[in-house]
Image 1 (cartoon, rainbow, N blue to C red):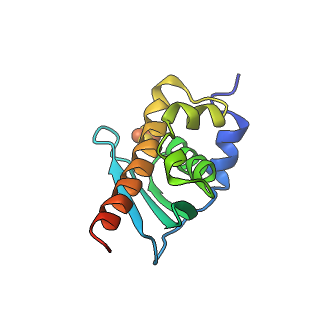
Image 2 (tube, helix red, strand yellow):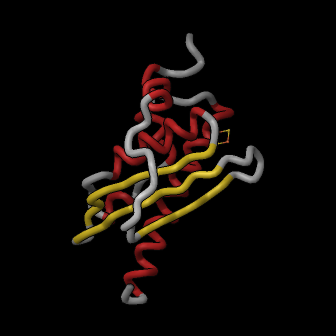
Image 3 (tube, rainbow, N blue to C red):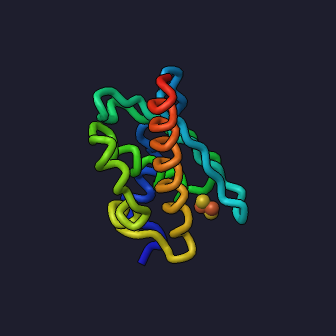
Length: 127
Ligand code: FES
């Protein structure tokens, strides 16, 4: 069996929603101290719905595939639904990741949560 699923390879080679976003109103950046990979997630939220999402990942192929898949899974969704996103769901949507690469999907979950927390913070501050 191939180490990586076709979906992982597809999202790694053709990542969706890659890049930065000037007018994001929720931005989250997380990193993994062990491997040194960094993931940044940008959200454009209107009416409590994720209208647009972009990411920048400085990391391994699984991290790129996980962030790409995570953006697809939350785009167009209500904030409350995006908050439920788990790394397990991301890995499942990618048809699995090798056990030692599961932390790459954790980074995607954390980046989404960090961006949502930033959005909530800005909202509370009236920004
Ligand atoms: Fe660390 Fe993939 S090896 S995020």
